[in-house]
Image 1 (cartoon, rainbow, N blue to C red):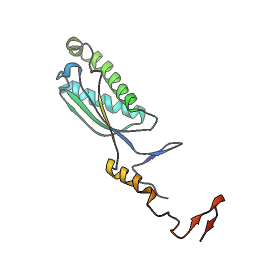
Image 2 (cartoon, rainbow, N blue to C red):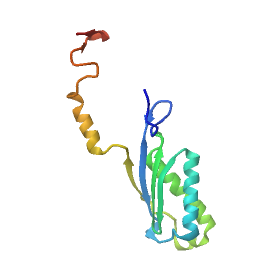
Image 3 (tube, helix red, strand yellow):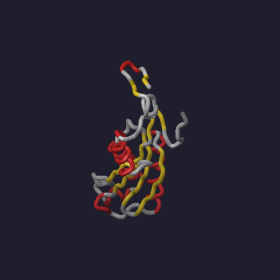
Length: 152
């Protein structure tokens, strides 16, 4: 069996998990500019590499961050968001004093997350609905008997 290279494996699963995360600075302040923006991207790349998460796409705007990241199934989206927001907040606020003076905390408490996969919702729904109507892989004429024996 060949496996598509997009899929990853661990000891108990084959998976393709991606999340689109979006989060904003507190009060949606436009503080992600210049050196802060550059350093933020470095820190996100660093933390993702430490955790073994693959960044598919990343973009920062002055007042929010978009990240498309692939993770292991053991890493919940809330954990991913909290790791990235907590780490970047701590480092950026220590390196850029103006962030401490304008904001009580760097990030708002909320974030947006959406799971991203290679198949659409409608494709998966249709696949599941069609399971009972699909002919078995071992052929229409053969019926599986109790104890795993085949009858023609």
